Length: 404
Length: 98
Image (tube, rainbow over all chains, first blue to last red; front, top):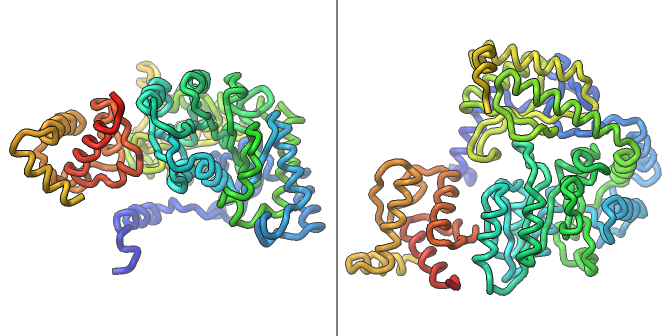
């Protein structure tokens, strides 16, 4: 017996998955869309690298120059070791991009949610979370002292009902939803949720981690795309997807926003982002704005993959967004399917409970603006081949019958 | 907690609000699990009824709908047995403005 024996059930799952080689180790990563795996050139179709900027020469150049001139790290928090000029520049750039008064940068997206949620919602307040929220939102809710209530995924009526139940109770209410949900790629019904927020006097926070640079004419995310930015009090996001680095942020017009810098512990008690990361993020944010064609390429690729998979009869999420998840009937099939895809040179995410909603097993893909139409075609051909080999896909019959 | 559970057990015999809640919960369990269940206050919701975490969450939402209450996550985390659940429901119902 060890102190970790309490996790025996999870250990079994881990060992099973490990024996199937699910914990992938790349020999090297060659580009935003390709890596070497077991000596084989592999298409990367599950890295959230939406705009494909991880190998962008300008982003790399900025990161290298900043590292040369300012060093590899800040070796402490901004509270203790001070703020670098580039931290402020990044915060100003984010505020400007979103048309907000304030911005604050965190060392990861996970910490942004931990910090913002635990700071906004105090004792006697009420936090209303979509049931399918990311782990960082759940963990942030536990770090605070407010009362946490889940509402049914993407269900504004259920949210409204729960806010009505709180009628008369003291304390602030904060609604938390995501722009694009990371497992199924579905978007929040933000117009309807904003209406509930207005009617009930709650605050609204949107996590645009997977929608920054993806949705909206300017790439600001779902709030922009849904035309409800004025109703969103706080936007949280990450640099580790469309901006190709690491870090998180929050923007807002709340006039006393800056008090967070001395009350938000996940901001205060961790090292600030290294200069190289800040520099590449700034360049990527600028590129996102200068080159809207990246979003067009991304959506073209997403549509090609989504339509292709559905035409073959695969069951996907409800919307053609850059996250496209294929439902598997059970874990065994999901693992077999995933392994055969990998052996055929296609890497994507095997998502199993509890990371997935409704205990479904998923093959989760995420496309990039950097994928070529040929790479998407190759991916579709591999899916078709593995589907046939596993007898999973009787293409003619299923196509005729249609699948939801 | 234990003391309250004992009280509920005693009250059970005289047909109290706790008994009514237990009967309702039993019916909701049957609905969610799809087969009859035999529950007492000591029944462990996960261990004895074989519910996974998702099952528990769906079950909690069914309970919430039925009683028109929201059970906060920290309260859900404290609920292990049917007795705990009855206590939480009873508590939240009496605390909720009707």
